[in-house]
Image (cartoon, rainbow, N blue to C red):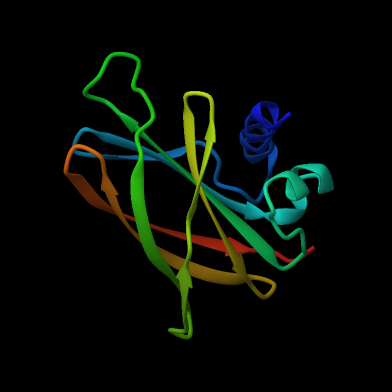
Length: 144
């Protein structure tokens, strides 16, 4: 059942008007795909399957790391640490957990927000093969 759920999450990210779907950044030989979206875009069934909190003021960050140096760009395991900082400078640590779906590897984190709150994300990535880098992006969230 779960092997069909994360592709659903990815599909929802593409359909969300508030998610910046399809964003990616190249960091050396790493191709990092990321998105952040309101948790109400996932169904209760998906939320339960992945122990995610559905709420109009809860966001989900989804990050996948691919190896550009190998044919087919396979998914890589990594350690992700980071924080989200709002415009007032308040910091919220991000706790990522790994989810594996066949050959796919995703890293998910959750974040509570206020309506129209903008966050600057800074995420340190340490991938297998002694490769590392920093992912930074901004996102405004809207409460449902």
